[in-house]
Image (cartoon, one colour):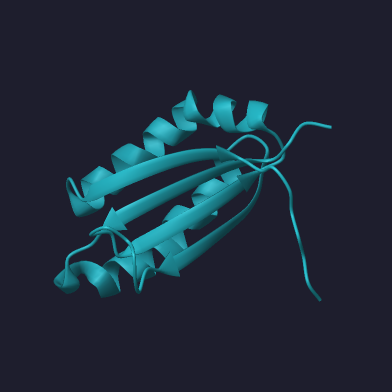
Length: 108
């Protein structure tokens, strides 16, 4: 079984944009991503409170495999959502990180 893929996006959102950004991300952007990305299994959003190197928001998308993550990175769906982001909030400083899960530990 192939390891899960992880796509992390960090953004530096201006304070005056935060309310609109959070509403739009929760109600529009994240649902579209979860609906359009091939093989995506979950999405989570976080407000970075320390160690973000200038970024204050982070979204984490988990994929069923590295292959599906790579497929998404090359997809029209991703390019379309990036364009919608840029059209809505301009050129916000963002950083992308791609990763492959090595091991998962769950407490419960």
